[in-house]
Image (spheres, rainbow, N blue to C red):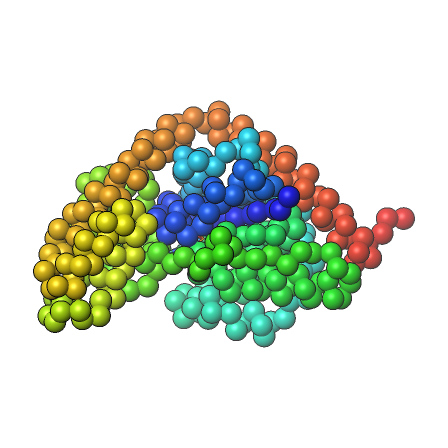
Length: 328
Ligand code: TYM
């Protein structure tokens, strides 16, 4: 049996990118594998949330993940900060992670550019903590979106390095999407991936009115002028979202209209908004129910922490002994 692990940083609500990039794969795998799903609350400290926001966001994503179908009786669902073995493994892995390679990662370089006043050491060593998350359960497969590919490469590098320095212990984890390309769900602002920023993301919790407004305001262009002209990026982005929420026939209908220069973006957006809503509406109702059920949430978290620690402490005990920490 293989071990599957995935996680999310609790920095806001769950959006379509999170769902179609990572969660959907995880859901397809949770039954046949030993599966772990966790909320990376330590990771979210790199952006300095207030204590209230930190707790609120952890609760939100927990309720959202349960609402989309993660099953706490099957998968181990836990909060990173409930498992002290993770930061200990992080400390140990840090000794063999080099500043140069960490500085060269794309996400670190992006952060240096986007938040020059807060280039903290946690940001630099982010991939090491992520490797610790994965290696603490010796995971084989990690369902993630395309944006996490480089972090996974780093995790593999740290695992290999440990195995070479000491002994073959860690498996080499794979970023996973059923043999297909990793997914990148685009945002509504015409360029780049869907994220949490205003105007770009569609959240599972969005009210129908808000969601329709967002889609209707999505960036488009002046429209195709020649038959069979290549599809412009903002429109391709809308088609890419359509690909995951609409039927193939609907998608093909609008692509054909584009190609014959008959497309009306208003119609495309209306259809897209309705197809997204058919997907998100039932989920939103479950999110609300689960968020209000404090007792259930607390039970899930306790059960998850216990199961996660059982697995993590076994790995850490082995690793400590391999490194040479022996008791007297
Ligand atoms: P995070 O919280 O940014 O995103 C959670 C998951 O959603 C995927 N994702 C996307 N996939 C496709 N298209 C998008 N637009 C999109 N936006 C987000 C991400 O690829 C991710 O799978 N560093 C991680 C959290 C993490 C983690 C881990 C993940 C920490 N430790 C260990 C896996 C294993 C992150 O920030 O994801």
